[in-house]
Image 1 (cartoon, rainbow, N blue to C red):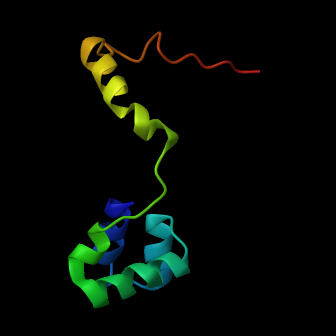
Image 2: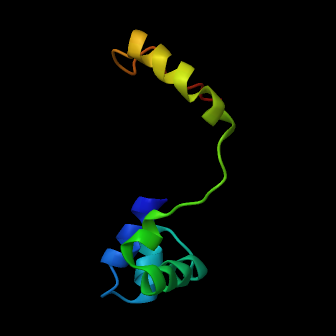
Length: 83
């Protein structure tokens, strides 16, 4: 989310509709990002207060697992069933 805000700000020299298309955001989001930047600078864009994921409480054990069992490649890990 923070990266998307920074990309939108970087593209500020472009037309708003083009920024929205490139960043895949709506006009309302762009307006909020620009307003936040005007009122609080870069720090306002870096301050993301989104909903926490249900996985957040398991972050330590997930990270630990992947440190012990790093994926070697994607083959065999991802199976796509075409129906």
